[in-house]
Length: 281
Image (spheres, rainbow, N blue to C red):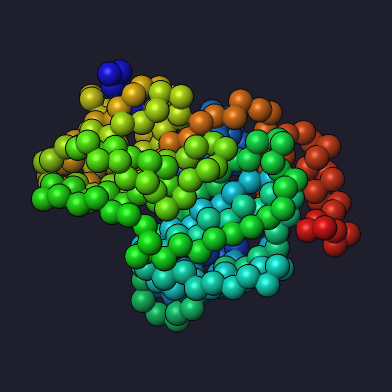
């Protein structure tokens, strides 16, 4: 099988979003085509309430999906459709904004650590104006594979390890995403099968990973364009990382803030729809 290499390493940079939430961002903004179908990846991690307490008040989205994965803390989701859900440690929210959703994400704590990730995944043009929906997935309903050497949480996609096929909590998405939280003990290794059709992102949030001759350190993201399997080697301090893979859409991307479409005209329409109160109609 063809082994994957890391072709690019990106250092996360401090950023701010929502009403002033401090986070570290690896991708987002311009140049998104190179990470297709992924649009943005943020990590938030602080035990200082001033860094997160203002949260993400009511705001719109159109044209993509957001995936929020909480490691620690409590975040309340509310949207214009009347959905309401409390994300707690280990939980995942998978939201498909499609033609339009207006929602808020607000911390439900005034002290303690708030830690997690938000990933944006593009939708194909034919699905961008579908009805929006979202799903809260409790930690207990997300499969985990565990041995003496590793722990793997299968949020999305299917994973075959040691002859066992594990079906992730989320499937049936057009970009066929794989979303894994992988944790290795110090100086151990793990090989993961990943479809050669998929772009792969490896985000290290603790420790470091060696992939062939490349080292991906904490708060760095490694990019892999092709290959059938990824071999992760943990360093002396072990490894905790997100392994994200998806099938590129190979469609034009036009983006502005919370809207991701295919043309500038569609972005202008989204802005107009929001200003005129018809984004969600």
